[in-house]
Length: 101
Length: 317
Image 1 (cartoon, rainbow over the protein chains, first blue to last red):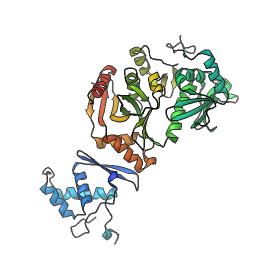
Image 2 (spheres, rainbow over the protein chains, first blue to last red):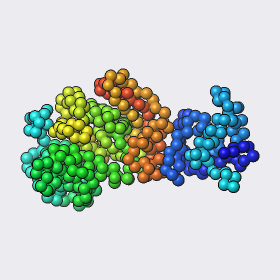
Image 3 (cartoon, rainbow over the protein chains, first blue to last red):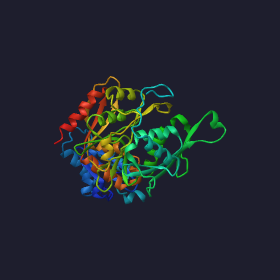
Image 4 (tube, rainbow over the protein chains, first blue to last red):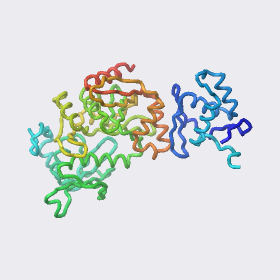
C-alpha cells in the first residue's frame, strides 16, 4: 500500500460525537456500522483525533509527531505508516479513491 | 435442622407460615405462583417439593397474588416423564412450555430454576444494558463487580450484602438505557463450593438454603436476599464504582486503578446484550464508565477485600 504525500488527504469516517470517548491517554471509538468498539491508546488516539479535526497528509502527521512530545518514537514515518495501516484495517479511515483505481 | 438427603449443614427452615406455604404449593401446582423480581414478574408452576420449599424460603417477600394478570416469564419446572425417569429422575425447565435446556437430576431442580431464570432475563431483558456482574449499593451509589465464573464476585457480593451494603443483584447489573441508573434485581445469591462455608462461617445469621451437590458448578447453595434489598427493590442507584475482582489464593488484597478505556472494553465483554443494543449499548456503557471510578481487585482474603471496598465507599463525598 502506497501512503505517499501525493495521495488524497487521510480522512476519518464520519462518526457521531457520542461514539467517541476520551479518557486520559485513551480514546474509545464505537463504529455503529459493524458494532465494534476500538480502544486507541496514546499516540494512536492522538493521531486519530488530529485526522478527525481535519483531513491531513501523511507528512503533516509526521511533522506533528516530530514537533510534539514524542521524542521516544525513533522512526516517525514508519510509526505513522503503521498507524495508518491499522486505522485502515479497522475501517476507520475513509477509503482512498486511488485505492480502487 | 440437617438436610434429609445428605445430612449437610443446617438448611434454614422457611419462616413462611404453614397456611401460606400451603397456598404457595397450591398456586405452584395450579395456575402458578407469581414472583416479583425487581422489574420482572415470573409465573412459576411446579409440583416439585424441593422447588416449593426453596421458593418459600428465598422468595417469601416477593410473592404476589396468583391472579396477577401480566407476567414477563411463564416458567414451569417438572419431573420428566417416561420409563427412564423411574430410575433416573430428572427435572426439566420450561419457558412458555418450551424447554430450552437438557433436563438435570431432580435434586438440582431449584438451581435449575435459578439458572433458567438467568437465561430468561438475558434473552429478554433488552430494555436494560445487562452486565454479568454483582451489584451492591451504599448511600445511593452502586458498586458494579463484573466477573467471569470463579472470579469471586458472588462471595464478595454475599459478604457485602451481609455487612451494610444493599444487594442489588448477584448476576445482573441492569442499567436503564434512559437514565443510566442501575435497577435492583433482588434474588438469592448463588454460592459455590468453598464459598458456602466461608459465608456460613463469617455470617452465622445468614439464611442459606439446601446444598445441591454434583452440579456442573460443584456444590451450590443459595443465600436468601436480605429483607431490606427486597423491600427497596424499586430504588435504583447511580453507578459509582466498577471493580473487576480476581480471586487468587494467597494473593495480597489490593485495589488498582484501571484506565477507563480498558474498563469500558472489559465491561462490554461482560455484557449480555452490548452488541444487540448497538449504539445505545455503547452510549450507556460509556456513560456508566464516565461516572464511575474503575479498579481491579486482587482478592485473596475476604476480610481484607471487604475492608478495601468499604474504604472506597467511605472515601466518596
